[in-house]
Structures are given as structure tokens and as C-alpha cells.
Image: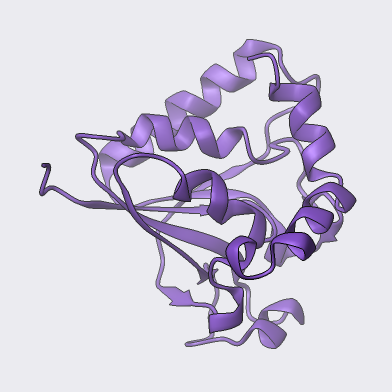
Length: 177
């Protein structure tokens, strides 16, 4: 069993929808919902939603790269978002819902940039890829009721994932890939 562990941080709009896809992969030790990229220490959900802290909703993933490499995490990330939307993600609008890859070292930065370039050149999307690639900043764990929301509230989660437009978009762009 691999002992090496790394951290990956992704902002993909509402963090409720970003946990399950990663949580189900081998080599993923944990997925935590939280906030990053802002200027306030230990922000609350209400503060982040007020768009005054500069934070984005994000997930921080502890993973074993020998089992599930960072490249695969980045690929899975792209398949959870609309990388052409600079105003948020799906029904969630505002800077706290903007997508980003937060890199923790130079290798992650290079992988993220190469992956973004590959996605741009793939022709999957007609509009430019606007997802940010940023240096990781302090990550603050969200309130307990947000953690693993899909397990605690499966019906609400399912309705939200469909009702927000996320599931339809993902099916349209990624189902056959």
C-alpha cells in the first residue's frame, strides 16, 4: 500500500457537487469542502456567499499519487465544471463560485497548465477556457453540514445537481468521452 500522500485543491462552483466524483476514486483518502483564495481567516459560508471575502468554494483532496495520480485528478476536475464560464458555475453566480485549479507545487502547476492547453486544443468547447490556475492559498474547512452533503442529503443533492444545470451540461459534453 502506498504511503505517499499529496494534496490537491479545486474550485468548481458549489462544493456539494465536487465531492462525490473524487470521493469515489481509488487512492483518495479524503475530500473536504471549504473555502480558499480570500483575505479573511476562517470565513463562514454566509461571509463567503456575501462575496466580500474573496474566497471561492473549493474541495481539498488528500490522495495517494501512486494509486490515483494528479493528472487523473485534473482530468476528472475538468469533467465536473464548465471551464468556459467566468461568472460562476451553472446556477451559482459570483466570484465565490468561479472555477480554479490551485496548485501546491511546480509539478502540479505544470500538469494543470498542460491539461488546460490540451482541453483548449481539444475542440470540446467553442468558447475560451477561462478556468484560473492559481498558487494554493490557505484552505478553510467549511461547516460540518456541508461535508459530504451528497451522503447526508442524497435527495436534495440529486435535485440540486440536476436543477442547477450541472448534470445536463456534463452529460452533453462528457458522456461519450
